[in-house]
Length: 361
Image (cartoon, rainbow, N blue to C red):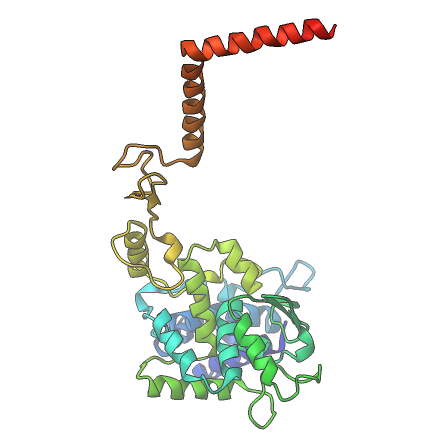
């Protein structure tokens, strides 16, 4: 169990002690239900669901059930908390307001045109789906540059263990910052440092983005984790599969997608309109727009589902065009050979060839 998880369990245990005056051994199911009810009124649906899960873990640790030999059995959930269900009450869910459009994100990145370090962090966080701690603890030696992409190795401080952060679209921003990095020749220097040369913190990045949103009049509570959520949403909407997103985010399963995905029914409706060519696609979704098929003969634009040109009625498939051209050539050659003069010419050439061969013998 991680240190952070232990702290969370300890915090939930404090909540239980705060809401009851009884000894924990004397608590019945009714007492547990009263505590859970008070937590439901003071915390979000996600936190209340986690609280129920943590109660079961806490009771297994401090008041475990015993087997027939009176030995603690951690495989059995204690009766007092066994009835708790860690479902999320969807009626209490609220719409997240930290979702950015691509234009808003571009405005934020442009705002930091004089700070290439912040630009590199914003672009890398959106593309790599890295957590703030994973990004800010990277060092120069963790970066492996290639011609037009880079690999950033998670050698430490990775919540899901070691791995690789993808850097393709953010490659130009990363190399621009590395060229200006004050300690670029020191492999043990942190990748993201401020003007004083100190390692950037989550608090500092959040402050920069809060100031940018105020200046740009983007009234949204954007934080470092908002970039990860928006990165997952962007990948989901552009057609990436759940497994592809899972691999990029280095998750153990695809269950975490529902936590980070900010897309809604309106986004799905817009994508359907884009696929049908009814509205213009936003940045990153151009590939979803129906493509026209130009005719190689007359240049007319046709629907991508058309087989023949609506203007000249010729086929649009290149393979079919080549087949028709070959058939035309064979037909023209056959017609040419049926001309009497040509036929007589070939017969004369054939007789002359025979005479020459006879003399040579």
